[in-house]
Structures are given as structure tokens and as C-alpha cells.
Length: 355
Ligand code: KG4
Ligand code: ZN
Image (cartoon, rainbow, N blue to C red; front, side, top):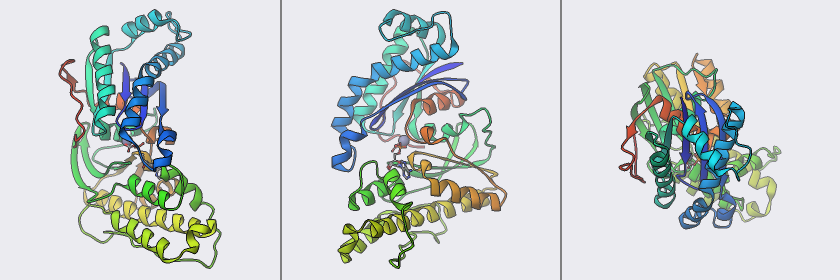
């Protein structure tokens, strides 16, 4: 089954064709991150305006790439062959999946309305996908990855930090969430404070890798690391960084010192995420742990989670870095495993959608 997945919840516009939930035939993403850089965060109006421009070209490119990979008889060679693109999609695409929330309303509407239009014109089923479920299913996109149920899923993105227990496909029990800032949001805000670009996560990671073992050292809090629940809180950690930077003027002017701040901040976040996830895996006797969302691209999180899990005999799955951030392939994969067809005209964008 070949599903066209469409993703427009935030500043990315993604389209992908995925076969049977695991084999990516194409995965195209356009990002407007560079336009938001000077604001240190996404400006919803700017994101939506860009998405209107790029959504059709991105979908066309995804269809073209997929047709070339399959080398089908109607292989499309370039975008000028509009009627060939339509014919190929009608013949080869079995369903259209779109993430309809949570996210920014303007961005969501563009993806949802475009998906509805194609579903009607090509007469295909339409599948609405929760974006967070998409992040989880990025871990099934590989012919080798076979997470086993029950499992613990950690979603760490720009807007969410959730721990979820899954006993089967489509069965989600929310164990805990952030009480304030999301993990990615904390990375972005601390990056801004340190004068780094947007998105902040990769920037913090890059700067932290330059730590040189100077005498300059301090300890940041690990919020809620000892609490018995599975909730998180990152706003106090962010405030601790603000206070630190304001208490010592030399920090902003010294790249070495800023690197130490980035390194310690990243360690504090990762310590908390790993501890809570491993505790949940032990409490609910899960052999597999899957991690998804943009922050799952973080190298320290990947290595520390894998180390601790291996030590206690658990297996951790991470998507490739391309599939960790927002993309259309994860939406197509989720639609394959959690197939909820909807009336083509009734699907609504839902900014507050949750588990
Ligand atoms: O999942 P995602 O692409 O979009 C949302 O659904 O929000 O996540 C974006 C977030 C941003 O906050 C970004 O700073 C963070 O993921 N991020 C990272 C890394 N790459 C992206 N955070 C830490 N380390 C990274 N390497
Ligand atoms: Zn996301």
C-alpha cells in the first residue's frame, strides 16, 4: 500500500510516498526556518504564507521521485508534465494521509485543505494523523526496526514533551507531559539567550561540542528528576540559565564560556529525559523504547539513552535525524499502522489535538 503523507503543522512543509509504512519512496521537506531566525522562534503568519507557496511543488516533487524510484511505466521526468503527475498519482497512490493537529492553525489548514482536495480529485481515502503519533511512527520506518509492544514512547519536539505507553498499534496511554516549556522550546530559548540561531537545538549541540575543559564550571538543576510521576518541567532550568548569564557579564562575550553553558544545559535536559523514560520502561515492563520529535536528533540524548537502556537490557529506537524532525514520511507511516479513514469533506484542522 502506497500512502502520500502530508505534513504542515509548523514551519516545515513535507510530502512523502511510503510503501507499507516502512519503505520510503520519496520524502521532500521545505523549511521556512531561515525566515524565523531573526525572531528566535516561528512566526505563524510567515510560516503559513510560505507554505501556501511551496505545498504543491513539494507534493509534486514527492510524486515525481516516487515514480522514478518505482520506475513505473508512467515515470514522470519533470514538473512540466503536470498531467502525468496526476495520472501517476491516480494509478499508484492508495491513500492520502495528513497531519491535522496539533500545530499552528494557519499551517494546519494548508495541509488539510490540500489533502482533502487531492483526495476528492483522485478519489482516494483520506486519513487524518495526529502529528505526535507521526513522530512515534518515524521509528517504524526501516525494514530492520521492529519495536515490540508494550513499549514506552518519548516525544520531544518544539511544542511537546510526552511519555506514552503503547500496548499495541494505535493504543496510546499518556503517562506524563511537560508542565510548562517543551524540550525543544527550552533549547530554542536558551539558544536565543546565548546569541545562537534558530532552530536552537542543533546550535546548542554544536556549541556544546566545543567545550574545552576550562576552569569555568557550574551545575544547573535537573528539574523533577526525583519526582515519582512522569511529568517534566523545563521553565525553571531555562530561568537558571538566564540568571547565570545575567550574573556574569563575561559569559556572553566568551565563546568558551558559552560553550560550557550549552554543554551543561544539554546535559541537564538529557539527564531528566533519560531517567524518566527508563523509569517508565521499568515500571511498565517494556522491552522497547522509541524516541521521536526534533530533539531526538540530539546526539547526547541518543547515546545516553542507548547506554542506560542497554545496561538494563532494554532496546532503544531512534529515527534517522532526517526522520526525527517534521516530515511527511512519518505521517504516511503512522497512517499505515493506525489507519483511521475519515470522510473526505469532514476532516478538520485541530490545533489542540492530543492523545
Ligand atoms: O519535531 P520538530 O521538528 O517540530 C515540532 O513538532 O515542534 O522539533 C523541532 C524542535 C526545535 O525546538 C529544535 O530546536 C529541536 O527540535 N531540535 C533539536 C535538535 N534538532 C532539532 N534539539 C536538540 N538537539 C538537536 N540536534
Ligand atoms: Zn514535530
